[in-house]
Amino acid sequence: MTDITPVETGAESGESFQKRILKKYLRDAREALVWKVEDLSEREARWPRVPSGNNLAGLVKHMANVEAGYLGTILGRPWPTPAELVPEDLIETDPQADFYLTTDETLPGMIDLYRRVWTFTEENIDALPLDTRATVPWWRDNSDTTLFRLIVHTLEDLSRHAGHADILREQHDGAVGLSKNNSNVPDLDEGGETYVDKLKAIANRYA
Image (cartoon, rainbow, N blue to C red; front, side, top):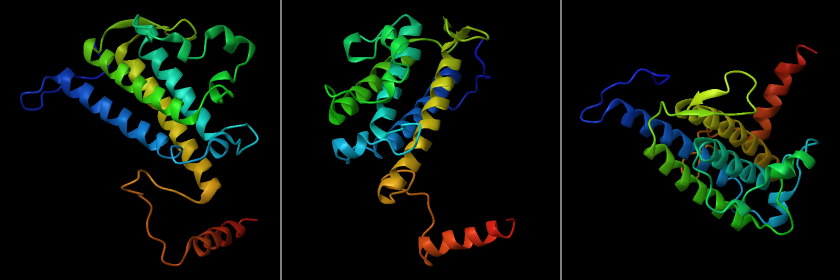
């Protein structure tokens, strides 16, 4: 059984509808992540903007590896050119290996890889039932799982890092928003600085 109750939407079957919705949210989150980095220079995209070293290009690389793993390898459908991904034995010696681009990698190349991974993982989602069984060896609880949970897990990870990208990009040049065509941020006629001052004044009342 899948983890959500199948529904009927017109002539579309319950599982087909569920897959369509899940893929929509995956696509929206992917695009939100990529557009925050694709117009930057190599240096700007790689630059660590917080003490943890988080950087925009590294977030793209991380998610390319996450998606290819959870929605590929774990399902018995590994990425066809594994040399493009970070090998597991490297993670053992460099736990952050999938969070930064090496000097042999380029930002356009990493974005291209991630977009190809999108196609690959969506083909896997289309090909398998949502209740397809899978095992994630490194999960401490309930390592036996389903395709449905793997999609939700990936979406959670992706959305979290898309949020990281929002903040990192705003730190760089002030660019904010949900997507290129819809910022989802109100037009602050007073100006951003005035709005921030307003929030600071409220916070300072609790100093």
